[in-house]
Each structure stands twice: as structure tokens, then as C-alpha cells.
Amino acid sequence: MNRFTQLIVRCCIRDWERVAEPPVRSRYGMLEGWVSIVGNLVLALVKLVLGLMAHSAGLIADAVHSLSDMASSAVVILSFRISRKPPDQEHPFGHEKAEYVATLVVALLMIMAGFQIGQESLTGLWREPAATYLPLTWWMFAVLVLLLLAKEAMGGFSRALGRMIDSQALKADAWHHRTDALSTAIVIVGLGGRNVGLYWLDGVAGLLVALWIVCTGIKVAYDAISPLLGEIAPPDEIETIRKIAQAVAGVVSSHDIKVQKYGHFYFTTLHCELSDRMDVHKMHEISVIIETRILKRFRGECVVHMDPVNLYHPLLHRVSDVIKDAVISHSELVEFRDLNLWNEEGRERGEVEVSVNAATPRETYPDITGYISSEVRQHFPALDFSVRLKVDFTAEPLSH
Image (cartoon, rainbow, N blue to C red; front, side, top):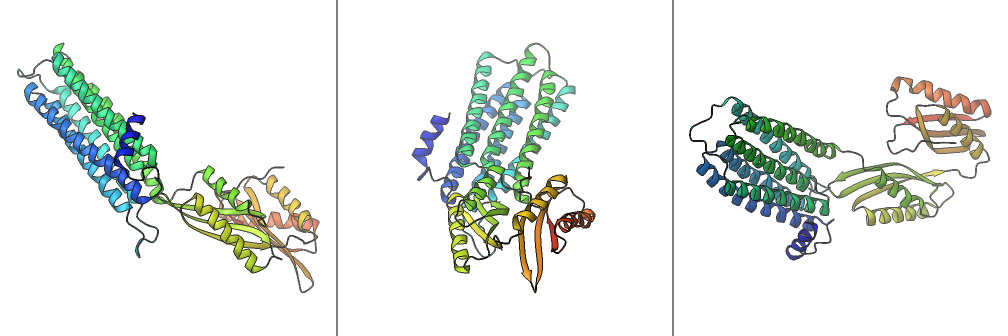
């Protein structure tokens, strides 16, 4: 299937390998959408003819289900049309989140289809067999199996395209194709039950499949809602950004890395520590280098905040060791950054920012800052020291 899909993609999509660009992604979505619409239309007509011939309400309902699948494919096409629109005044980060909206809509359609199949199956459990019920013949069985395989092939095609461009919308539509294939399988079981007098078999199989469809729809919906709400980037992407920043000469460390994803558009912010003796123009040059390198890897916008620190203060390493021991010994603390020491009007002053576990109650913050400050004062009584606590979900726990 993957080779066949790649062949179709190369023949039908211009610049098919540039999947990160919105116009190219849109072409992938259009291809999947139109293939699904045409395929569902043909399958629905065949199922409708067979259903009328066999007097099968289940098969006619399955035909209607295939027609309804066209709606989800139309939603996919519309979402990709919207997602390729450039940024504007109302949407400065572009429209690529339209794909997640489409995924949510398709998931809701899946859940509705599951409830519909479940309702029909419950009704079938108590339905009296009609005299017009015809048994399942071999030729009809062969045609239904071919329809099932065709629907699975459509799902595999949508899934392959979804993996190529990492699109939740296409993957969701692939799941929707599978629900239709399962619906056809229920019809085969129900018609086969007629041959042996087990008319209730259709209802039992339908209930099991309906439950599976609803559960799958809920999972797909969750996968769409999470990025819409602004989920954190994967740990490997955060680590890549950290390595890019710290590979630039002059950068001591990086922290507070935040990535907001708008489809394949990344809005990235991070803090970098460097020497306060560095010229401001050099600081700006370093920030531009970091931003450029990150944007080459993650398309979008990037903002680098520079934190100048005194790397040459005689107490820096000793104070750092004390704070490190305090952080490691406290289960609610993760790491520290922006340790700065300076002399102001003849008095030694210092400050540090400590990352705290997100589950830590805010009412305990004063006790935690007091604990760290007391540890520092115990070793450096003359040092006027302040501590700030902050939650950083990308912080890495310290160790000895």
C-alpha cells in the first residue's frame, strides 16, 4: 500500500516531498478527500442495490453510512483549503489549526455513527424475522467481502497520506473508513445468521462494533482537542531546541523553552544565559544566530530572551554548589537558573530562579524560598540573597 500510495502521490501532487509547506499539505488533503468522496459514492450505490435485492435493512443502512462518510471527507477538503491560507490580521500565526478542527468534526461523526449502529443493533435483537428475508448467497458474500476490502484499502490510503504529512485529520478519516468496513462486516454476519436461523447474531455483533467505534471516536477527539488547547511540544523537539541554542558560542545554558504549535507552524520562545561582560551588539548577534538555526529546523517564529549573568564573581561556583545541593535535597524542586551575583553600594547581593514541580501548592512557596535562602545565608552570611520560584515544564531534574 505504501508503494502504491507513493506512486499516486508522485503522479498527482506537485512538489510532493515538501510536506512542511501549507500549499503542498493542502494538495495531500485534497487528494485524500476527493478519492474518499468518489470511493464512498461508488460503494454506497453498490450496497444500496444489494440491499434492495436482498431486502436487507442493514445493508441499506450501511449504504447510507457510506454516503455519510462523504461528509467527513468534505470536512477534510474544507479544512485543508482553510489551512493553506496565509497569515492575516486576525490570524497572525496562520490557519493550520483548521486541520485539528476537521479532526474533531470527523471524530464526532464517528461517535454519531457508532451510536447509530448501536441503536440499529439493539432494535435488531428483538426484531421478528420477516418472510421476505433472503439468505446470504455465495455471490453476494463475495461482493460484500470485496466492498469491505475496498473500504479497508481506502482507509490504508488515507492513513498512509496522514503519516506522510503527519496529519491528524487524514488519520481520523482513515479511522472513519474503518468504521464503514466494520459496518459492512456486521451486515455479512447478520445475513449469514439468516442462513442458520440466528437472526439475533446481527444485533450482538453490531453492539460490539458500535462500542469499539465510539471508543475510537473519543480517542480521536481527544487527540484533536489537546493541540487545540495548546499542548506542549514532544520532549525530543524541546531537547533539539536546547541543543541548538547551547551549541552557539557564548551561550552558557538555556531554559524556559516554550513551543506553541499551530499545525506545523512553531512559535518558540526561550531564555539563554551569557556573560554580562559581553557587548550588547554581540548579545543581539547571538540571539539572531540562535533564532535562525531554530527556524531552519522548526518553521514559524522564534524569540530568544538573553539573561546576562556575572560569570566571573568569586563566589559564583560556591553559591551554585550550595543551591544545587538544596534543590536536589528538596523533592518539590527541579532545577535552578539565572544565578546572578553582584556588588551594589559595597554590599554583596544575589538572586536565582528555581524551577518548582507543577504539583507543588502555591501556599508552600514562601517556605521553599525561605529554605533555599537560609541554606545560602548559612554559608554566606554577608550575602543579601533573593529566590524566585517558577514552574517550567521543560526543566530537567538535577542530580549529583
